Image (cartoon, rainbow, N blue to C red; front, side):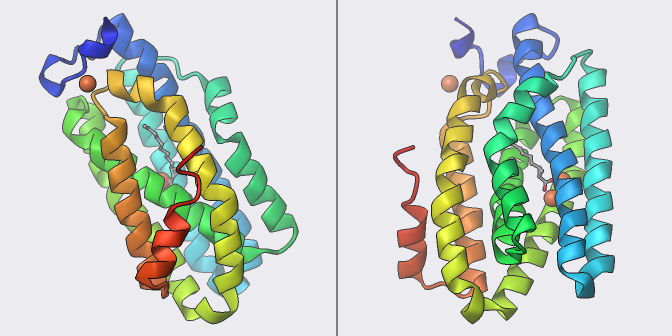
Length: 231
Ligand code: Y39
Ligand code: FE
Ligand code: FE
Ligand code: FE
């Protein structure tokens, strides 16, 4: 009954059950950081006036990746990178397609809003239940993720009127994918004492706040948030 073992106080970071779940969650985070690193390099090409800042963000993502690789090694876990690539495949593909078409608004929605909010939610929920080594790493990382989210918010706020339609359509296309990803990781997250309900709640708070900061009304946000709830 591994499903019952997941309260923070009962976690055994060295149990086979924990390490098996960690091999997938750790891989997801490593793959996510790797793709985020690549995505910010791509965004730097698409937004040459922000090249320096975006390259700086991409380097932060690469450092995050190294930090989480160390977390896996610390627990003697081999990350399941194949699983992680499949986990991100749909969002990854949508980002690539948007980048090829020069749809920078869609790229920013996928990386700087959706993926960053997902990361912030996951890391906030993970920190209280992480092993000591991983907690210190993750506390440093999550601060950076807020600054990545902020980059997207500031740019999209500045270009809100001309981006609105593309943002709504990119939200409609990509938000359902996030719910599928959460479902795919729900059991493993539970084994690490990370509850899906908490992840969903934190994600929606971050994402709703981001949409509000960009310029969407509460009514818009309600409508946009409803996409994918059935996924
Ligand atoms: O911007 C970033 O650094 C984001 C790439 C990292 C995404 C991490 C995704 C974490 C999802 C973990 C789900 C665990 C329940
Ligand atoms: Fe539980
Ligand atoms: Fe990161
Ligand atoms: Fe980030």
